[in-house]
Length: 265
Image 1 (tube, one colour):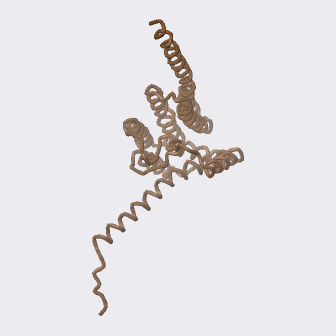
Image 2 (tube, rainbow, N blue to C red; image 1 turned 60 degrees about the vertical axis):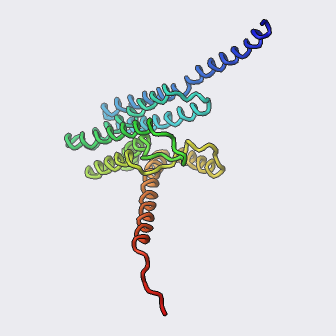
Image 3 (spheres, rainbow, N blue to C red; image 1 turned 60 degrees about the horizontal axis):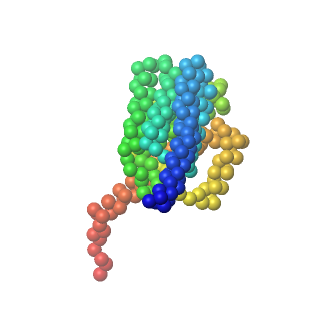
C-alpha cells in the first residue's frame, strides 16, 4: 500500500504542474486579445475627436494583436473556449464597430440616413461572420469561408490611412465609399474562400521569404504596404472565386450541349 501511494504522488504532481503552467500561459494570448479590444475602443475615441489617421492606425494595431493572440495560443497549446469567446467580442468592437464609426464620421456623416444604413450593414455582416466562424468546424483545406472580419476592417482603415497619408489635398469621392463598404460587407458573409494562412502547420522557405519581403516593405512604407496587402487579399479570394465559378459553368455548358456534329464520311 505504501508503494502504491508513493508512485501516485509524482503523477499527481506532474498533472498539477501542467495545470499551473497552462493556467499562467493562457494569460499571454488573453492579454493580446485584451489589447486588441483596447485598441478598438481607443480608435472610437480618436474618431470622435476627429483624429482619423490615429483611429485608422489603432485598428491596424488591433489587427496585429489579433494575429498574435492566435499564434500564442497555438504555440503554448492553451486554446480555450473562453479565449475564443473573448476574441470574438474584441473583434466585433475593433473590426466591426470601430471601422464603421470611422467611415461614417469621416465620409458619410453628411447623409446620415444612408450613412447609418451602410455602416450598420457592415457591423451586422461582421457579427454574422464571427458567429458563423464560431459554429463552423475547421476546414480540411485550410481556407476561410468569407472574408475574415479583421481583413474587412483593414480595407476601411487602410483606405482612410492611404488617403490621409498621400492624398491629403483631396478626398475620396463620396459615392465610392458606400460601394466599398457594401462590397466588403458582402464578402464577409459570402461563401468566397480565402486562404487561412495561420492554419498552415509548416512554414515553407518560400513563405518565410515572402514574410521577410513584407516586413521590409512595412519598414520602408507602412501605409502603402498595408493598403496593398489588405486590398490584394480581398481581391485575391474574389478573383479566384469568380474564375472557379466561370470554369464550372463552362464545364456544365459543355456537358449539357455535347458536340453533335456528324463525322465526316
